[in-house]
Length: 283
Image (cartoon, rainbow, N blue to C red; front, side, top):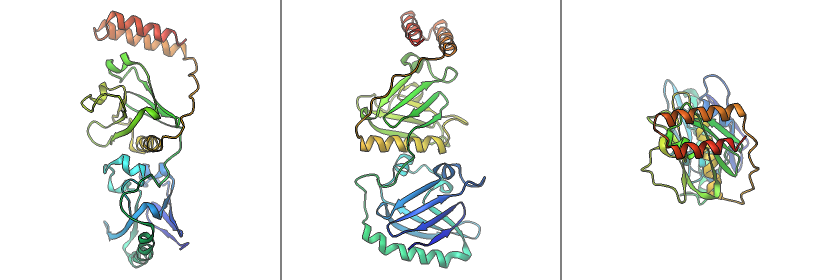
């Protein structure tokens, strides 16, 4: 088709086999869309297109992704606010006829590309490395493994006892993301041999929890989608270089916090001695 349709917060460029979506970076554009920047959605990843009335004199043109085609939507699991839906294009009502034209042009192309659940992810996700700050730690992903480094101000004693964590993609079976915009948001890595969902996220070393200003949607959701895509494809896992030596001041602060947990009776003498020796060995 080769045409361009501009709406509020996004521009769609129609091509013969895909729709290239570019999101604006204005202050009114939802942060998730700004973070995504640009997405090329293959028509093979779309099963339908709708045109519906919007709010305050607008219409909404929306692509309907096939189940299993987009790791971002799979990770979101229906939790995204309507305004942050990357498949919506909001237009003024005066452009309804034009939007209807593009919808009619797309429909036969979608019929040719197939429908129903996709057997693999078809829409690209943000590339690693990715990271974000949660309430109880910092999460990072290098494409091969996920690392959780606990914050001494927010992490539970259970996580401190377990120590900082590293999870190879090959050892994971999925990702559970709960939006920080709802009560008790978190990101949990589902391990092949890990405990069941009965373990609370704040006690689970395979999870980081969100809080006000920690783990925002535009940072944690693309992160979850990238990990999920890596888990599903599970290609060869490169060797991760050994971590560099820690800052002595950071080690000292961690030992101090560990001592506070010990004095409070949350860590046993044996656990305190073992963890202290482990931290000192990182110097």
